[in-house]
Structure formats: C-alpha cells, structure tokens
Length: 477
Image 1 (cartoon, rainbow, N blue to C red):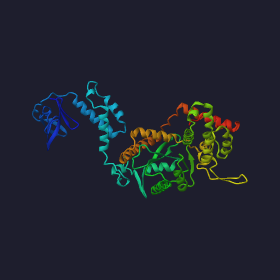
Image 2 (cartoon, rainbow, N blue to C red; image 1 turned 45 degrees about the horizontal axis):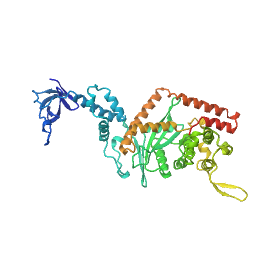
Image 3 (cartoon, rainbow, N blue to C red; image 1 turned 90 degrees about the vertical axis):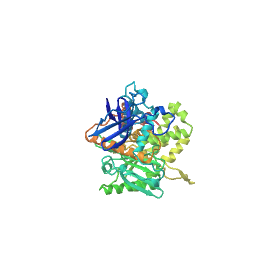
Image 4 (cartoon, rainbow, N blue to C red; image 1 turned 135 degrees about the vertical axis):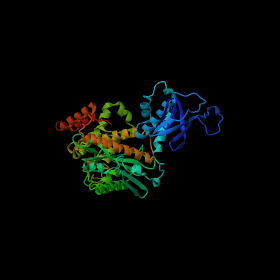
C-alpha cells in the first residue's frame, strides 16, 4: 500500500487524508472529503479514516484504513504539491503572480494541468500568502508600528534608522551602517521620488542613489525614505536626520555633488543643509519640462509633424551643453527660432527671471530665475565625472514598479520590499568587489554619447547656432 506525507497531508493509494487528532506519536487521519457540518450533498461526505505511528518524522500505517465511499483522484497529490510550490515562491521571491505560475506550471505534466487552479485563483493564493506574513496594515500615520522583523535586514543589521515626526508629518528612513559608509565615499548622490507604489498614508518614497566601486562602479540605491509630505521643512529634517545618523556611525555626511529633478523644495533644503554641495539638475527632467510646455501651448502636433520646427525647439534643452556664462548670449540668438510664449516662459524660469520693473531709462529689474543656468548646465559634468541625467535611477524606478506590481501597496508591504531590495543591493556590491565588469552600454546610446562628445570637442570650430543644432540632433524630448 503506497503511503507518504505531502504538505501535512497523508496520501494513501491516491486518497488524500487530513490530520484529525494527535496523541503522542500516534496520528489519526480522515478523508479530506469528510464534512463536519450538515449538508444536502451527503454523498460527498466520506468517513474513511487511517492511523499512523510517527517515529523520527516517518509515518507508518497501523492496520488497514477504512474504505472510502468514492474513487481516488490521481491528480490530487500533484495539485497539492503545486499549491505548496506557489506559496513557497510567493514567500521567498518578489516574482509577479504570472511569473510564479509560469515557472511552477512548467514542471506539471500536461495531463494534470486542467485540474490546476486558474490564473486568478493563483493570484489570490499568492496575495493571501504574502499578506499572511505581515500584521495588519496601518491606515493612518498614527497607527504605524513597524514590526521587529522589518526593522532589521535579512542579515540582522538595523534597517529602520530613524522615525521622525514633524508636526503632522512623518519620515521613515531605511538604510544600514554599511550603505551609509558607501554614501559617504560616493562622488555624487542622485535623489528622486516615486509616488505610484507608495502607501496612501504617505506621499512619496524618496531614494538616494550613489555610485559604489571604482572603475566598475554601479549606481545603487543606498537610502529609502517614506515621506508623508514633500515640503522644504520635511526635506531639511530628512537631510539633518541623515547627518545625525552618519555622526552616530562615526561618518561625516558632506556630499560633494547632488543631482535632483527640478523640485524647488528639495533644492532649497539641500542648499540650506549642505551649503558647500554643488547642485545639478537632471538634463532628462529639463527636456521633459520643455516638452510639457510645448504640449500646454498646443504645439505638440506641429512638433510631431514638422522636423525643422521640432529641431529648433530642441535648441532650448541643447543650451544645457553650454557653460553657464554662455547661455544668455546663446538664448538671445535662438529667440528668432522659438515661439514667443515658450521663449518667455524659459527666459523667466531658467535664464533671466521675471521682469519686476522697467525704469524710464529702459533699465529692467528682474527677480532671479527659479532655476538659474548654473543649476541645469551640464557643460562641466564630464569634468566632475558625474552623469548628465538620472536615467540610471529612472530605470531603477521602472524596475521597482514592475517588482511591486501594484499601485499604493500597504506600508508594511512596501517596507518588506525595501528589505528585499536592500539584500539585492548588497549582492550587487559583492559583484563589484569581485571585479564584475560594468554592463556594456547599448550600442545606440554609446554611439549617441560618442557623437555628443565629438560635438563638444569641436565646439571651438562652430558658431553657437551650429553647436546647438548639433546637440539638438542628438537629444529627444
């Protein structure tokens, strides 16, 4: 008689028995189809029973099991094993339900696949399993209580480094001593926020990325922050907290250069807390801002159908490849090519600032631009050995959204995902230490980078317009 244990169920000749009672080493089993409540479908109620003795984890049948009132189902054991594998992978991996299902189904015989739960049922199994390992999700900032299992990394290091209350707002900072040390050593930091995956009780997840390693360095996430607000006060509190955390570990956090998008609250906070730091705006975000203005002016169709017109509009972001003291002159030269509403907007926001007053003698008084050329010019980025864009971080955000697979997940859920990502980061650092070379840049991007460098090196032989045109040919909005 074939008898074996499978996921706490006893399989006897194709019948599935579930545990009923245990007395010392003796186990009493009953058919999984036994019904303990009154039902109209009494024909499905099976009273078959079996008894086993368990010695050193091995079960041996005592006597002969009573008869079942139904035939066995040869597929049931495989289906049970399938469900178990789904749950194990849901707990141990960050794979999407479709990925888990595809991987597990590939090991199931075709003759049994029709008996498996469908994709929607599998998704629910995975969701329940992942929720089961966490306590109830907080619904307000006041309810937040990060459990001990999420306060530390998988290696047992402290992960929740600071939990701060700023009036009605809250900041949670996640990192480790090891990653703070990498942050201290980094040539530059890249800061960016994401909004879609964060819990509804928070506004954003703010991450700090930095290069780790030397010639084979990679830009990796080193700090994760949940923020309920993104005002200047909260950013200043965040950066002050980071300084204190560093001091507690014996490190001085004093970044040389920070790359951000064009969020004024973060820019002002960086200036106040790290006054010696060089701040650089991301070129990708500058180009995106220009594109949004083109759209708001109703020029998107013209941009998409008239290459000459679109090339001239790209002269605007191309200004970023000039030195700050060259930008005003070049901006005046391209005025004839740019629609006046876009020209005036860029002038007020990024070049000269808004006109406050015009005097009788023709003198103009202006307020400073919101983002002066020194902030968004990338002409010195090569010399400083810093990237022009946050594209590596943008790629990470896309990967993160794919891994999460849903919008506005729970607070504890997102912290558990941060914890897994931190483990992945440590693995990446170990690869760097082992001498693993950088991933090769895609040939298309490598060729564009080479063309841009050729234009930059040939700048002395070109007029300003020809220089901007050359850059414009190689950038996209």
